[in-house]
Length: 192
Image (cartoon, rainbow, N blue to C red):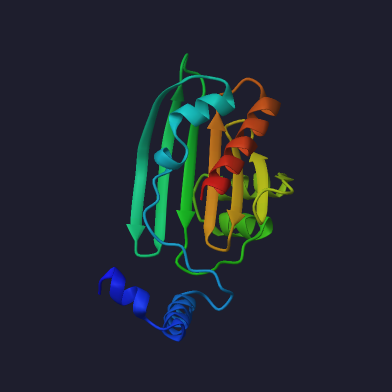
C-alpha cells in the first residue's frame, strides 16, 4: 500500500486499526499490564567497568564474565571485577526468574540453613543474613550482610522477577564499601 492509498482510507478504518493494535498488544502482557521480562542478561554490560570504577572510586583493572546462563525467560549472569592495586574484589550476580517470585530476608536465611554441608557454611550464612541490615528504598526487598569479615553481600529483589547480589571482599573501609554497593545496585536496578 502506498502513501496515496493510506491517505485515502476513511478515518474509521484508522481508528479500527489503532484499536486492534492496542488490543493485540495488551493480550501479550500480564494481567497487571506488564509484560514478562525476557532477553539475555550480561552483568558486565549492565554494570560496565567504567561505572564500577566511578562508583567505587578505584580503577577496575579487569571485568570478566564468570558465569552466564539463559534458558528462555530464566537467566543468570555474573561478572567478576578486579581493582588496581589488588586487595579488593567484587562480584555482581544478576538473575531473572521466568515466573513471579515471593522473597524475604528470612526466607533466604531459611533456604541457606537447609543446605547440608559438612562445614556448616549454610548455617553461618543464615546467621549472617539474619543479623544483616534491611535497606529501605532499594528495590522491593534489599538487605546487606557481612559473613564474619570474609565478604560483604548486598541482596536486592525487584519487579517480581529480578534478583541482584553484589559481593565485595578485601575492602578496607566497610562503611564506604556498603554505600558503594548500594549505589551500584541502584544503578543496575535503574538500568534494567
